[in-house]
Length: 296
Length: 244
Image 1 (cartoon, rainbow over the protein chains, first blue to last red):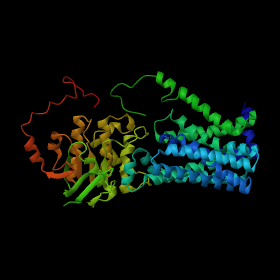
Image 2 (image 1 turned 30 degrees about the vertical axis):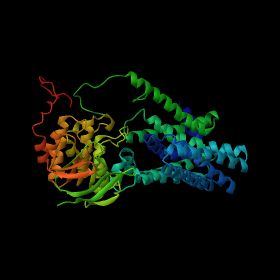
Image 3 (image 1 turned 180 degrees about the horizontal axis):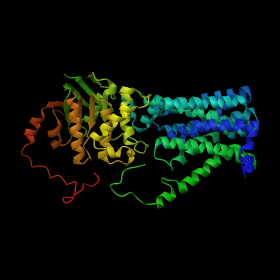
Image 4 (image 1 turned 120 degrees about the vertical axis):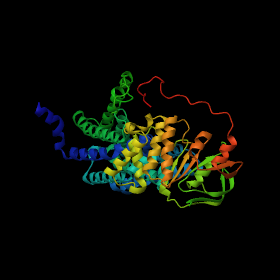
């Protein structure tokens, strides 16, 4: 029994590429879900998707300039992601259009530009790689980059945490304290871009959003508290990235989709059986009688 | 003494002048009622005092540090779906003294509990904001301004949609804050509330402001039919009070 478990769960990680893939997945799982929780709470769940498209032209330009060099491609991705975020923000401020419509326009332009650039310079295999990643091809350079970016995100998020919370809840209060909400918002979007750039090597630009949003939206079915949401989302991401890797190893599945689909099945199960707002929670109708002490 | 003065102030919204030639001083340690019809410029004046609206002419002279100014807006800008408890909201009031980075420590939590007890919301400490009634929310928000040790407090119709018990608690707390030297400005529509709370009145009408004493207003309106009796909040035969 024990030997079987070992063969199933531990043996795959004897391989160096699986070890690196695991570390990359775990690093991303610590940084991405808290960002996803804040995106969700700010009603910006789809912004992650838009930003993922926005980093594509930069990645493609990096690829054209330096071939398959992760640092250069990442740098390009960060720059184009930030550029789109800033452009969308300023267009919406100048024209009075809502930020999401400006964002939608820019990410569509970015996607088309990115696909065009990749096709001009490479083959369709390269395009697949950029769009969907390959966590099993993570080398040491990529690993250092991913771990470094993830750590940076966690640290910056800790620094702006209270400002971010207050800005979500009551922007006027934050303004009264002399902190401009726009600055906090900008830093936060910057972190989203950084995270997606770290994720694109392993999961691809499109799938990287999955590790950010799915654990967050799933956690909503299990907790009403911010700390709870973040902790549960991180837990889900850790399980999904480890489990997804094992699934992909044993069943010869592509690793990125395996990770995201595992997280996705967690979402579906939680929507059915979760503690709050799920289908079964709607059936469980009961309330504590008057006068019983509060607990949660 | 007055740390908040208006000098020939002219304010506009969307290119249209709302108020002009507004002068005067808000007394420290006093509660000033801001009265006037809808659209007379009360909210506009409050925005200008908070520094969120630049005057067309004249100036607002405030010697209260910006982080000690608190504002309870009428249309709550709060996102009530955000998962935060009453206690966490009140703790954010430590920002001016404690900054936005450091963790809270024992004395902060003790002060938070004192404030919640003072406002009668101790039992709601861990309740999410989204599950509060209007009155409970107003108490929690006032709790944050207490934690903030606000020296200038602006409230836009704080007693709208609030039961009389909450009104009593809020008024008592406001009175205490004024006694300790805070400058408080309250937008009011209710004569009875004005008579209980206001030390001074700034009356806005027709684009102008006039300072009047609460007594002169009360004199003028004395002899009008009395207000309808209040509705009861507890069962007359109840031996135990229900959940407020």
